Image: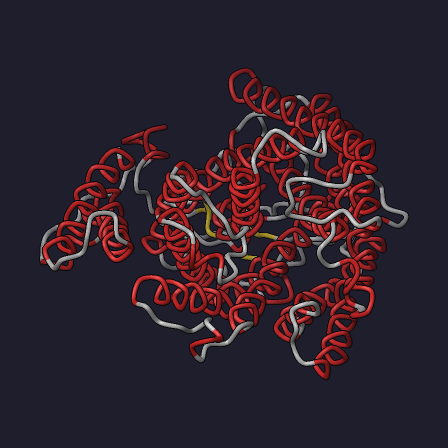
Length: 610
């Protein structure tokens, strides 16, 4: 198995790297020793996990070993280095679903701590729990949809056999497990994580080895994001089937394309910031030390220059799923398709000039507040266009309130609240009072969890039959939605109220007069966590005993539903030619795809007609 070989080779690599540093005089456990040891561990992990067997052997004129296939390895291929985009998508899906549940469990620990003003955890332990929850959920939000459903369905939706760079695609996934390993090991070391998930200096530069591992893990995850973004862009530009013009792309593909542009362009800036922090720690540099000529808020500028576009890396694929699901289950053409595409591209264009609204309280120059207030308000225009497109699609549609449709509508409701509460944060005088309070925590969770995570769950329920070949229990899916939606709003609306009354975020204690509202939030949080037990039970039961799914159980038009469930190894048993728009429900004579047999290329009756 790739995991076992990766761990063995990685351990050997760490021993070699740290041993090399010991030979040059570095003491045991020093930061240079750990940093070089981690680098060698990462190289060893990748080589052992499959890069050597399936890729690097060719560099030395040796024959590469074949990657596992469905016929030769069955389920075992999901634990191996595979270049099949569908296998990689499932690897991402399982990994990030597990991380979502782990991050949720840490959130339960936080809510237990906040049942009483004094709490159970000491401040240092609370910092570690809060930091782990934050970075895990940020990683889930950034990569869960892009990595899983992007990898699995973009080639299917555009009529391609695979991604443009299959081995780079596998590499982008196998960079993720070392991130989790480093974070878990670091959280267990003395000192824990002292800086919060954003790793601001000077705290990030003064912690122990655990903070060094945190920085290394964060940097590695950024490398995975850059590789993945490049692969999606090339795939969508170069791998589309005949007839799949830009004007016929499903809106989900457009959302992946736009998010990938942001991921490719902006992740390098946070990687630069993390590299500078690593050099401060390991090499004695002083990029962020004001007393030595460094910039006191330079890190924040670099971090947020990436991290606000990263918010759109999280949410744009959620917008794509929202519009995809709503159009199909309203049985209507997507209202204002071109405006929706323009809105997504507008978000991409504006997202790089709004970062400093995160820094109104940082001490930056006052003359910068007005332009960043303006750009923040401007980016709400294309975001609002997405909502108009969605509402226009729903209007007078023949809605089917399936489980994915309910989660999409929940996304629409929650993100509306997140967007409206964000207006206050864009106003500098108001932000000075609200910035470091639970108002921000509530607002952020309404946008990301209430938006992106609801979209992620909508996508799971939407594409579950295609991925697994099984149908799930729709009643349990609706029960999951009902409990989660109510509990979510009962948790995060009071959170903003608590912030309005001055409850500070990232702090292990709070004023006693806020005890009642915190206890109410904790109870709601426990119910929210319990809703995922329904989800886990439904998925596990359906995988084992679910009704066998038809190729197109929802009776939809897009390409992924015109092949078997689950799809064959090369996706289609026919030659794909696209002949119309994917959302032309109710349009007489409209088809989306015309199929030809692979042996004759003779046209056969059109698929996905309405």
